[in-house]
Structure formats: structure tokens, C-alpha cells
Image 1: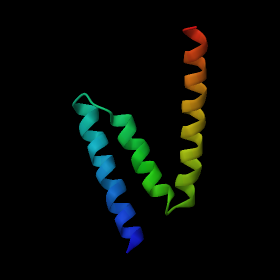
Image 2: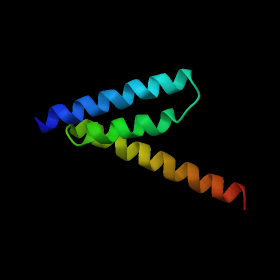
Image 3: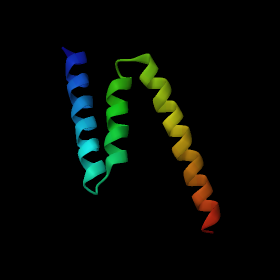
Image 4: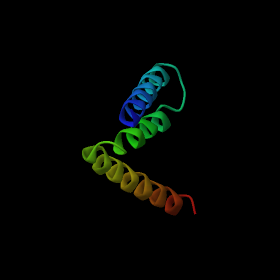
Length: 68
């Protein structure tokens, strides 16, 4: 039952992300939220979440250095 809720919530976030790709909005946040939901169930999604976290961390460090 818990897995079904996570799958439904993750799918909802993906649908919202696709809508916000077409219409201006926070599509990246919804994709990350979907990845978080799926990572609670699937081990492969956890690996992708770690990669996304590393990518966002390195991007924010580069931006901080550039605008100092």
C-alpha cells in the first residue's frame, strides 16, 4: 500500500513537471520531488538522486565562485 502511494505521488510529480516544461514554472523541482518519491522504493532511483545532488552541489559552488 505504501509503495503504491509513492508511485502515484511520483507519477503526479512527473506529470506536473511535464506541464511546467511547456508552461513556465518550476519543472526541475517537480522532477526532483518525483525522484525522491521513487528513491524510497527503488535502489536505482537512489543512485540517480545521489548523482543529481552532486550535480546541483557542484553547480551551486561554481555559481558562488563566479559571482563573488
